[in-house]
Image 1 (cartoon, rainbow, N blue to C red):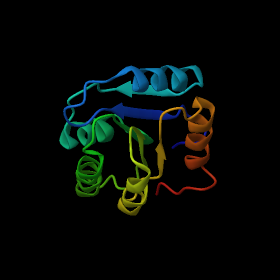
Image 2 (tube, helix red, strand yellow):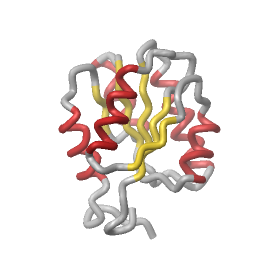
Image 3 (cartoon, rainbow, N blue to C red):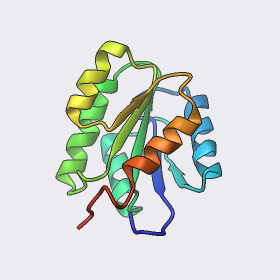
Image 4 (cartoon, rainbow, N blue to C red):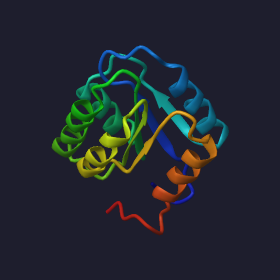
Amino acid sequence: MNEGSMVRVLLAKPGLDTHESGIKLLAAALRDAGMEVIYLGVFQTADSIVRTAVEEDVDLIGLSYLNGGHQALTATVIEALAAAGAADKPVLCGGIIPEDDIAGLTALGVAGVYGPGTPMARIIADIRDLLDPSRISRG
C-alpha cells in the first residue's frame, strides 16, 4: 500500500455459495471507513479473484463462505496468488467457518478469520493494522 493512498480491498465469494448479505454489509462498512471496495460477487473462481486482485492492485483480499469449501477454495486462491507473483496480498476469510478449521486456514497463510457477529469495527481495525505501512514492505 502506498502511504497516504486509499486502502483497496477485493471481496469475493468463491465456489457455489449465493448467500451475500454478510459480505455486502462488510463492503458497506469498509466503504464507510474510507476504503475502496471491489466486490466480485458470487460464483467466483480462484483465477477470477487473482486476476482482478492483480489488475486492480488491491491491498487485501477478503473471501466469504457460508456453506463449506473454505479450506480447499482458499488454498486454491492462495496458490493462484503465489503463481501470479502476488503472494504478498493478505487474505482474510469470513463466514460460517468451524473453529476447528481456523488453524488450517492460518497454516495456509490466511491473515485473519472472522465469524458471524464479529464487530465491523474489529475487522476494519485489523485491516488497518495489517496494512500499516510501517509494518509491511512492498518492494
